Length: 386
Image 1 (spheres, rainbow, N blue to C red):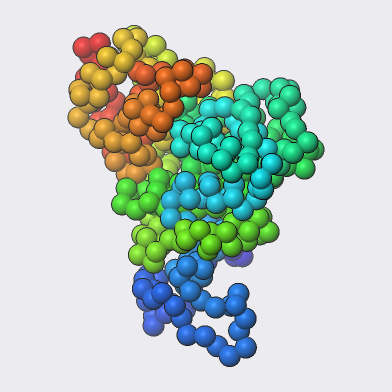
Image 2 (tube, rainbow, N blue to C red):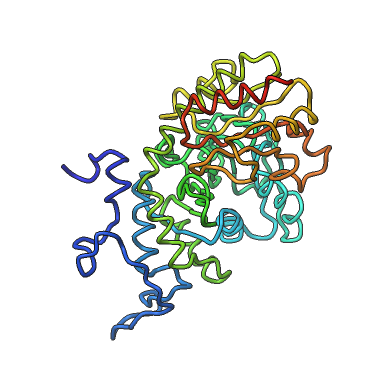
């Protein structure tokens, strides 16, 4: 069997690995060395140095990640925000313009709103589900379109195929944050995206014990990102590389359990009288359901919902649940809940949050790998008093 014929579960274990193992080691060792012995005849680009992200820990990870998304190359970074901002500063120049999807992770949105102008960059925001309106945001200096595969925190699914077509038609770089979907559910390069990025802190690592980022895609822009990252100092340390590498190997089994539990929980919440709205692409009522059915292999482990009682009801719910932990991250083995208005989107003003649909009482749920029925019973008990 050729590697291209292997399932993603097999690739998660074996893609990119050094075989035979170093000194027979089944697990890749941690190369806790800042630099490596040079060989006569090497040029600068052949030098192995931790800041250049080319230690064995880095190169094995990059090879594996590229295979997982059917892409040409990958690089790991110190955080998801490092991945995002390094993409901007390696592919854009002063005077350039970016089109963003209007519902985004708060850190991305805040950076575009607050920091772009200081770097001579401009941006506009568009509805990802209305491609017929995107041309209105075009300028002669537009260079990039940026979306999320499943948005944070409203879990919307934009018209992703239209994004790729629009980018090609107007010679734009197409960038997608694939954190919420993960390569198990969606591989952006397969429909033509130039670059995909992840907060590897979340699903890729899956154990809530490191912060890291990932950029995957065509070789040429990934090389530019990697070069800029070496200037900015965003190289991931060897031990974090090891933990990400280890976490990746269980990605398939984790995400499929999270897919199943999240769908069951979303159906339960949608039917509950205390819940006024549920956001989850696996529900037929979701505006992105048909697109998700066509593009994804699973609907993901993220959902959000609003209670009829608003913010106060949301606060009571946070105190009443016993299994989920109230914490701001996502994608780990444990279920987490948070109010985005107080965490991921706290950097936005109340009016800005309202503009993008993030209500103060919105609860975001990252479904872990606990027993599905245990989660449903816990949510049911917490909702009993609303």
